[in-house]
Image (cartoon, rainbow, N blue to C red; front, side, top):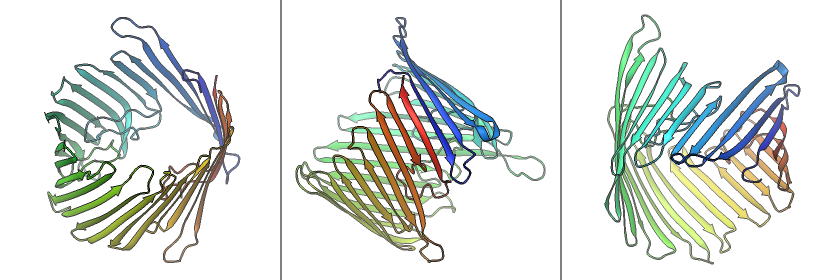
Length: 439
């Protein structure tokens, strides 16, 4: 499509088991740009609108967003749509933690001194929804950056204070660090008189990154108290309730070869967690116009779970079309195999993967060689290792017709699983037809 074209898209989705309950999903994207003053510079942005209509019960829901950029200024306002994730190293706020129907907005100033304020009307906080506020201030390097995150309901209030920064120790060495403190109140018990318990948790890390000649390495120390937790995050980059040291050393004996060694040691900070150890070694060779390969091994141990040994191997042809790899883990519940095969051709590519731990396999085939048509097929199976349940099948099919310089129309069966074998098994079967046009 043209880069600055107004575009409209729509899709009608109908469940296979209930043909009368179709949904109309449509949206409009309007990019714009205009002159600005000497302080702001040129103004650019986009207005996006989306509506979902449910004819079966005569209801509809709309979402919209306005995004602006003018010189060092950035701003956005959305309704019934995702807000923005935080950028501090502890990942306290993620866009997926949002409540339908809520408003969200933020403003940001980028410069020698930079700042950000973001407000979300409602985010899911256990059994209730409540507001979220994020503030951030950063000075010129090497000044640290200060971030504050707060949210709450009638049953809890959490506040996070984060200080992080980076320091160049030499031309080849850089130190990154960060500390976070969590305070707040939570309802101690749902039955009986309402009583609140205080929350006081912390987390910290320091990471040294360096390179010299053919060597590159990093070393990190981090620790997190057991109860440190943000209810508006999707994951956490460090181990909770443990103090750990981890690092990686990489060495290139030749330009096309790499030796990588990784180690991780973690000790619990209380009785809820167990100590663990991990070591990984990997060697790879990727010379130009020759076969590329890699080989590696891993040793993992955790108290109460025993030792897990693993290895991996891979091969790629000189034209970089065929890619083979296999991973194996032995220990715990048994042996787990994860083979993968990928073939890239000028007009199509194929991916096949299996996982004995999930007892299933997945195939994806995409054909893009025709100037007007594109086809995507995903098929996968899962089975019960004990043999008590029948084999389950899963299918995704999408046929798209390109409209040169205008967009495309498509017909699909099912919804894409984003390349994951463990996703989509509980989704109901559906058929959909859609269009995306530049106007």
